[in-house]
Length: 343
Image (tube, rainbow, N blue to C red; front, top):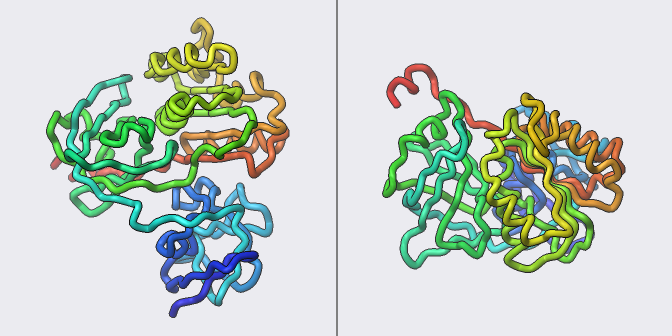
């Protein structure tokens, strides 16, 4: 049975099937609500229910730590009745703007002991339309998908650059070191709404953990291309110095914004590294950005890292909750021992 969902204060309404999330129903209708992980972790899709009742998809929890008492996670709930929702934001999108491509491996470089930078090329004459900070879905042979953020800026629309951390037993990441030039991969994009707010003058703080640097690289390269001038702080965390695997990109931004770009490398398991902060990214944030009132923060990385940064920024450093944007990297299921052996 379908239920009707209306957006409060607008003339927008769309249908939602009983086995479909509110978020997916909106996206299918060409309405983009804020979202990222679509797995109930990041909290980006949290919004209010003005009228009606919802329940968790398959019994899933419809709230997490990022929700206020009035909010639910639109990605994890489905209507029990007709609804009126109050999202924190929405916009119309063209459902046909998302494209599927057969991409070809162009270059596969080991950037750190456990990170590959994978550059893909699209077929001749095809272009991928996306916003800096969005991600793609990569289809595997078993029908499952994996999500990776584009690290290149949107103007490089005939190519896609991915930062892939090697996860032991990972269904895709464990195979990345074996990919050769010319190998084909099936991708669909774009997904996600963790993008730069247009026109805002607020100082920006980016917090990356590991390959959470990828969407931030896309955003900063896009800002440089569009000549956007705002105060910028980038805090990039890794266990050891070798995990800060693209210092050349950081150096480029330091040259581009010599007076308004600040970089902090946070190393959680290595002391005594020159010009590096010894500790976690949330500790570095507290030290280097003690007052976040009237700032905008983007945190990209593991669920635990993002949650620690969110709690610190909002509860202790004065950041408005609406100015926190998260891209949570949730790992897919690992291969079984038998599958790993077969691979």
